[in-house]
Image 1: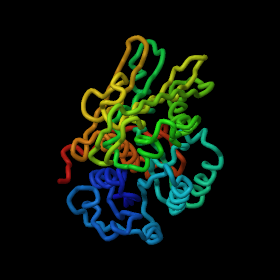
Image 2: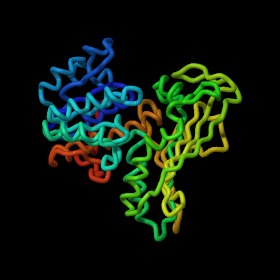
Image 3: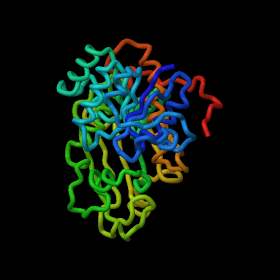
Image 4: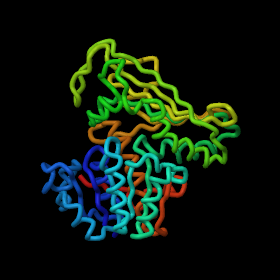
Length: 358
């Protein structure tokens, strides 16, 4: 059994605890938390399942000193990127296989800036650990899934990956209100939507698709559209969002190939279904991920996932976490290194069929 630590117990961490517990090759050895109120609580209680007999702690030094074989780093890197990088380097240097969505510039690690790659590579050399980074938007929906489906086509003109979500189900108020700008005046400049930031976050996934297809992206282009709420709305998790404030966002990161946008990652997010009803919507519920292959034949695949009481935002997190946690045993059996989604195989759920903790 591979001793595995889950570091962080938010949206991603809760799903990670469940995924580690369900994996037949992994054993949950520790859970690291930042909030003092969570210290001493059973990991199962934090993850919404039965008790697991693992007590949450904030003692990073002791947990890493025990030399865990793997770490699922589920703490946010959105507003604390340097801290997240330092934490991850520390765990890799301790010899752990680390999987995480926190370091988006390393989605396409081969083209990541040297100042990010070099500390990780040095930690791998010093400690013998590994690192695999994949997104929660979800990573598989913007790399391995579109590449797999593209192989079904006779002719492929363009690939479009869509995330379509009602953000009122995403229980990270600071990210939703301030990073993305939901509920802010329309003249507010959300950091996540500033020119160049979407390309910085999702450009690596565009390049991963291009690499898988054997084509070259000459440049990245961005589009952005924002809509105000026509009425004040009330949400279950984040309170009210006032009329006239930002209620929906639609943006694209386009990979230009031979002068045309051939590889596109698109996000359509709302704080309420009534906003921007003319934009793409999920078939049902709160959200979905969609891949569209324009060509002959035209292929469209939509994936919906339910988790934590039919919360499709949580379901998207859970499938992204499944991709990361499912890679741990492969990484543990492979030589130390820095890996991306094209390196790490997507495998069947061997040994999981019929296993479910209440």
